[in-house]
Image (cartoon, rainbow, N blue to C red; front, side, top):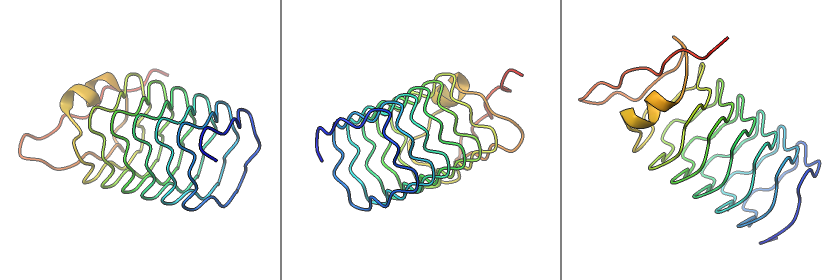
Length: 153
């Protein structure tokens, strides 16, 4: 399904393990509760997609566009989010343990309650552009990352 055009498609609870959705257009798609472990979503367009409670373990989201995506309670453990655009994404209570966030854009991303324990390649510059709360869990490192500023009410 590479280059698939599935904008605004209803894929709620779809089982898409190992799916090749590289460069797919999934803008505004409804993927709540979908299972996408090991899926290839590299360069996919997922702006404003609803991925609430989606299972994206080990998914490849490298350079994916997730601007404004709804990822609340999504499981992104071990996901490759290298250079992904998560600007204004809702990542409340998302699981991002061991996810690769190298050069990911977190500008105005909502990290309230998100678990970034052991997240890879997360920098202070990325964190300070996002927002969070006292329940945002950051990786432990020698420099000691400072929590993100509070989200606006």
